[in-house]
Length: 230
Image (cartoon, rainbow, N blue to C red; front, side, top):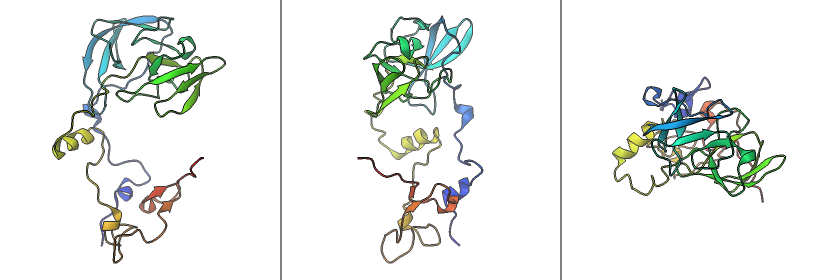
């Protein structure tokens, strides 16, 4: 009998391949306050994240934020207000057009959901009843004016310039994110091991698109593909 697929191992009850949370720093959420200031006490590395974190001291409380390029230890960060300086946090309705931002809230008060990868930033394009933001992918997205964001570009953008050089380093990098660093093609397996396996030469042998509601063992290939626009 063949080996069970990793998708079968995951099952419908949640992933069995969890990221090691005991090694991770606390979650990164924008502070729940309208006005105030904080001081950057330290810049630290966070396993499982591509960017460093800034440790903020807000009224004696510790808060973690994505470090922005140009921030430094001892810098004062303003929360709310109209001061558009790198590292400050304010609502999109107060940010001038052309300003790079990151860690944008999808809904006011959710703590930040968009543009959190090292070296990434979005650009405020226009303001009004809603704020139009150009995302790193080039897509234009509308946000509520009361959604908050951090001014600047996420630090750590040059992380891909230095090669990993060996497979061992890649293993440890992906381990923090609970991503397998090796994978075998389904067409290289036997028919008992994978839906794409078997045959006298490497080929899928049939449709490789599966619906989203398919059972975990059937989900191999393209899952719920959408028609390309344009």
